[in-house]
Length: 338
Image 1 (tube, one colour):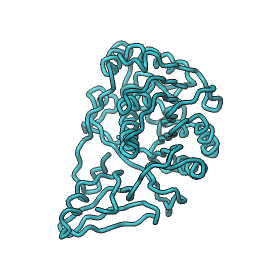
Image 2 (cartoon, one colour):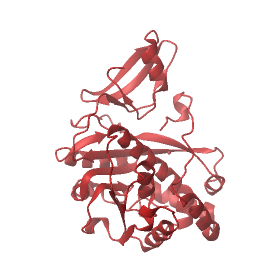
Image 3 (cartoon, helix red, strand yellow):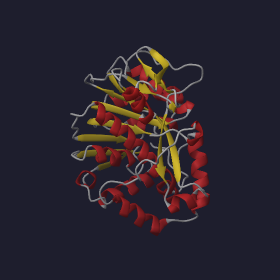
């Protein structure tokens, strides 16, 4: 289940940043969420504080306020999911999934992000253990204006007892964080057995979140084909307490700023993820795994590929590559040809 209660490097890395596109949910979900919040909001600041504390600790959200989740966590979680789905679609552009299994769906966040990328999805199943979130998902699905959600099956079930449902895509967004760390490999294998084509795991971009992703990756890399963020299937080369994560920056709504007592109009959501497929992808190059750094003489890129983690320096005299490097984002693929 998602942790209930933002692809750009943070400002303190000395790199000018833009805010990614404003969060826009598919169909009529923007209006539906706004209407639901208008009718159900309570003490937003107190509920948000409790929610953020629970999220930081990786705890379950059953004691948390639904309105606080929709205000504070939904936009950031959706933005992370949307970034991951877009990256996957760029790697396998011919992929046209028809069915989706959203494990630990919460209100359906991952399903929404998948539909923004693959609008022809027809068959959606959402697995959620908490009845409050099941009911919320059903309400939002019904009012979404999207056929795939209006006909979606919301099933109350624990992640350890998944129903007999398979789908082209199985996605578990912010789910493993609420499980014991040692359980991540077997849970990943179980979800993989339900995936016809693709399994996507997304976790908070913390050392603990990455540790779960790494454990799942090690277990799964002999079973399928890793397509993202890794461009190789070797053992993960991260070391010295480093962790693989990415960030997306999103604009905060007024309600979001009020709930978090925020003074800046944007938020960065850090996430780690893994996408593994049944069919081998055609991937070339390396993944940029840190903010890029550029000056008058060169641009520096921290990369991960089959040769390991390494930094390359692109001289400014190599104008085409240097220009490309200056525009490259943390999390982008860097072409060896470039």
